Length: 171
Length: 302
Image (cartoon, rainbow over all chains, first blue to last red; front, side, top):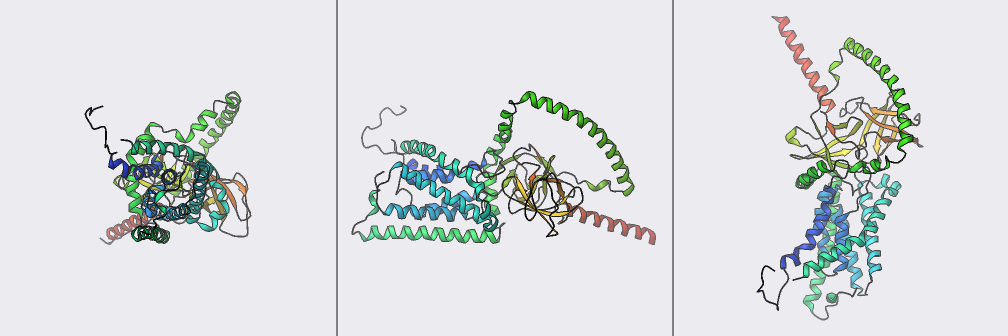
């Protein structure tokens, strides 16, 4: 330890970590499109959304209801979707999750995964329909690999976010 | 997981109001998001600046990683190439023999072509390249098909310029920042490329399908003369792409046209070339001709 004489009681975790780590991880997740992966069809999971959902479901009550809007705007800068698409869809997801939380029923891990999966499917399909409703309605099957990959990746992202969360609140 | 604690605020008016206000803000966020979306659907270039900032911010990372691991796109192919190596070798040797003959034939055709071109004075037809670079990233999580190129306005890139690879057409420049440019790939569903069949110049439109193929619809509706294996090249109409760039090969006939596979698969091309706009070239050529004619007339008048 660099500070051997620091107090052993009444210690506070870093306020910067507490306040900003979740947003920073979501933005880094959105920036995943900067990786030099050139694909011919949508395959990369929407990492920003996965990280956001992990935080939202691990720590209900941490994000305010409106948090989907600013984070979605940042995601729109990197995703290539029409601007405002993630801001709109993530806001809707947050409203739905908040309404769900208001029911006050305890949830287990599998239900969290189901909720996250439904949210991912909703955002990906709506994101595709926003681009071109008429012609894309007939070929939504393009999204199947991406949706499957995202749903299967969600538990791993949650694990990672859980570890980050432990570090965030640790002293 | 246990339900969060602060959900039922009891009789505290202040707590109730703050929950209500955060709901209102959430709904407001959704509404504003929808408005932004509508704006960007009706004016797709409206938020280009923000996206350019995003691309520029991540460009150093993308460029470095693209240099390190240039072969990400065809890693699967590299692995699968180890299997069936012997049979593939035999097939390739057969192909090589037949190709040798074809090369000789092509050489003869090239000579004849050059002779005819000289006769017609068409030698200046092929436009020069503005720049050559790597595609550094793509929108691989969205259903839009766009890629980022490691060149920008400082290298002379302008919006609308066609981008091609040796294999064929890749797309066109959609947004240009100082050191990066966004390329709208041929496979994007918003990208319509005027094409013609190489064999008989049958004009058609190729619209992207977001999965590496294009939908081909002939301009003369009611006829559907396509068949598997037809090569589609750019027709030059519209003035954006120079005529004669290979675009796609028909793989399947449909009710209204055909589905064709794009030749220059953005995932596999290593480098792309940015070309000047074809029409701009034509306009410049016409202007040059006018100047020449004026000069000639002036000289004649003296």
